[in-house]
Amino acid sequence: SPRSRAHRRARRRATRRPRPDHRQACRHQSTMSVMQGLSAILPAPVSHVQQATLHAASRAAAAAPKEIPPYGQRKGWTPRAQDDFAGGGAFPEVHVAQYPLDMGRKGKTQSQVVALTTDGEGNVKYDAIARVGKRDGSKVYTSLSDLREKAMTGDELARPDEDAIAATTAATKAALEKRVEGKIAAAHNPRGMPKAGKAAERAAPTFIRYTPAEAGAVGAQNRVIRMVEAARDPMDPPKFKHKRVPGGPPSPPAPVLHSPERKLTQEDAAAWKIPPCISSWKNAKGYTVPLDKRLAADGRGLQEVQVSDNFAKLSESLYIAERAAREEVEQRSQLQKRLAMKEKAGKEEDLRLLAQRAREERAHVGGGGGGLGDRPFG
Picture 1 (cartoon, helix red, strand yellow):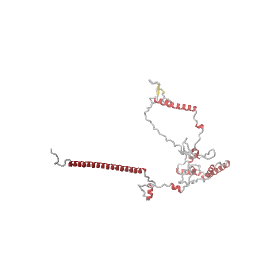
Picture 2 (cartoon, one colour):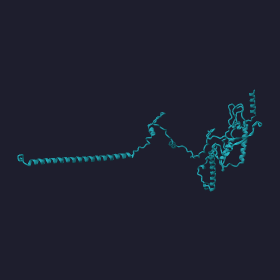
Picture 3 (tube, one colour):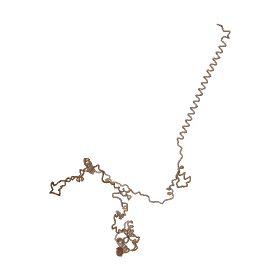
Picture 4 (cartoon, helix red, strand yellow):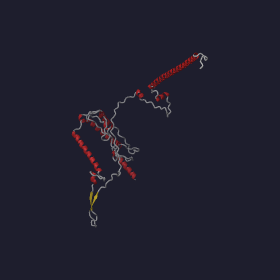
């Protein structure tokens, strides 16, 4: 059957594959021989970082090869990485999408592996990792010198000379004149047709000579057709939608240098211990809060009672007003007493005068003619 024939072909292909363990062992031996030859030829390393890198590479090369299940025992096993293929082809008995050596893979992402680079002194430049995935032109601050103030020389801070100023002025003037001329040409074009540039060349009329197919027909003759681009109404809505492309990420901020980590002490832990918030109105979880803690959370112990100076001023003003009122009342009472005494003395003087006048009249009446008989009759 076709299924059995395909199975036999797969078995023959699998038997022709070299053993992965033998291939890995050969590759390991060749790598070790190359490393030994390079270590014998190259000079001694300059820095310890490179030495550590070489040791890591040798350890990675000396690592045990990845085991691949033999044929017939690969049920449930799926090749994921390139090491699973051992440099060979795909496994036909594993029914999953396989891409040995990334062959046939669509939309392969760019590798994030960064090559090991060094500076002029032989030190490894680890700042290349921070620049992976950044857009072109973005500034990445990765060294201590980026945080220090740079001393500018006199030539860098010098003002431009007259020639540079004249050249910049001429270029700016030419650019502004070009834009102004374009605006003026667009304003003076009532039909919406371009007047300058490539658009004007495309909009220029084209003349085409037309010859009828039936040249012997009556009235058939050559004609010249004038092709003109149709004018566009400037008030028409756009026929496509403008999509604004989102901007790329900005430059990363300058790194913040922190002090080395210190062991946390009991004093620091107690200082950073923040008590829980205790509400005077709600207790949803039903906590039993002591009174001293509740008063401490209320903040009454933190408030200092301060008596304002206005209370003293008010009491003093009230005392002065009361004393002034008492003095006025006393003076008014003394004045009323004097007026009463004066009025009483006046009444007593009037009564004394009346009594004296009465006594005088009585005395005059009694001693003037003796009696009624002594008076002469008229």
